[in-house]
Amino acid sequence: MTVRPCLSWPDKRLRMRAEEVAEVTDEIRAIWQDMIDTMEAMPGVGLAAPQIGVMLRLAVVDGSAERGKALRLANPEILHASIELREHEEASPNLPGVSAKVKRPRAVTVRFLNEHGMMDRRDFVGIEATSVQHQIDHLNGRMYFDNLSKVKRDMLLRKARKLG
Image (cartoon, rainbow, N blue to C red; front, side, top):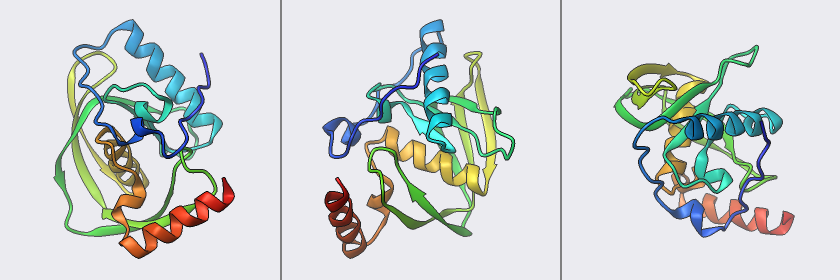
């Protein structure tokens, strides 16, 4: 398929809530494949459709060591999040050159439409839990740095502007 360009911050689409997916069609499957190709080219552990300018609630996540095991999610929704937090260095191809440590729940249970158009649910732990939460943030018009204190967020965005 295709490696698609990622939008550059502060593109306003990165702040918009993505639209629900009515059904999983061949067109949706093609978008997912482009997203996987784009994620692999970065390389990253996840990608949300708005990051490439597609305003649909689609995400892909692959935290496997060997790769090639990307999970395709449409309309993902967190049903349960652990109380225990996990800190991880997060970044985004939409704001290259900077990253920050973000604390998120260590484990989440997510409901989503799978690649077959069936409602599914899965427990995510560790890097995949972090990634799926990061992607759902994108689908809701949020960036990882929105989880930082104002001081840290301002420092990160100043650094990104200098790099840009």
